[in-house]
Length: 103
Image (cartoon, rainbow, N blue to C red; front, side, top):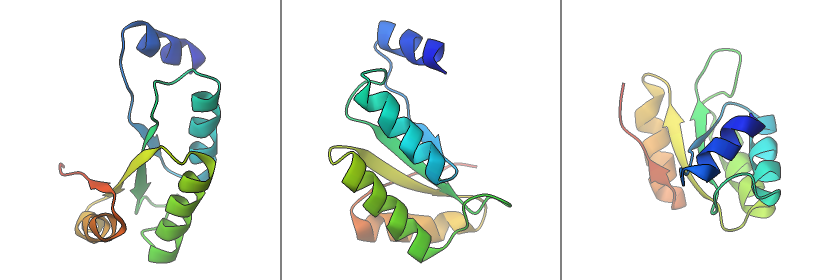
């Protein structure tokens, strides 16, 4: 992971960090604070994956709050798997984040 982060910095690539659970948010913030990711951090909360982060509004709000607390300048978006995408788009827009479209 650190090698890939170094390559992205070398080629001026800013990654979108896909966070499938809370630990991914903490790891992304740690890499950012170490200067291993181009600032500002951009995190995509991926929700609705079986045995991972549920598409749950309370959890979604908690992940936003956590990211804002740990990395106030970070930007974020919500991504829902399957039918959850519409729900995540609505929640993201209402909370001031970004949305995504796609398969």
